[in-house]
Image 1 (cartoon, rainbow, N blue to C red):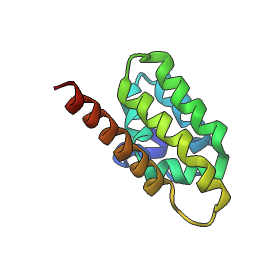
Image 2 (tube, one colour; image 1 turned 30 degrees about the vertical axis):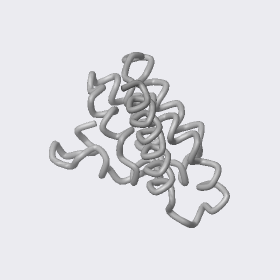
Image 3 (tube, rainbow, N blue to C red; image 1 turned 60 degrees about the horizontal axis):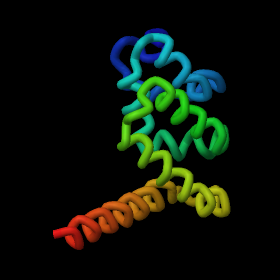
Length: 122
């Protein structure tokens, strides 16, 4: 990992050499840097770049690796759900960078639903 970051570059900014981005989640977990993986899974620009370079399965695998270590992380489960609901539109228009907007819209929708349920209980 240090060869790619020079000890200073944020993990999300590592340039893709055809190997590291595809295998980053594996290496982060192997290095005991699970929080670094969690941070990546919350980076829409990184998710979008990986989606277009390596496809849906690669990102879902990253989420599953993380959740295999921390199965009770509700925020990451929610991000995975938003990602899965957003990919159809993104793959239909691969040249348009719309994953961020799609995920944000889905997360806002979920947030509003939760707030409405909470208000109804009161």
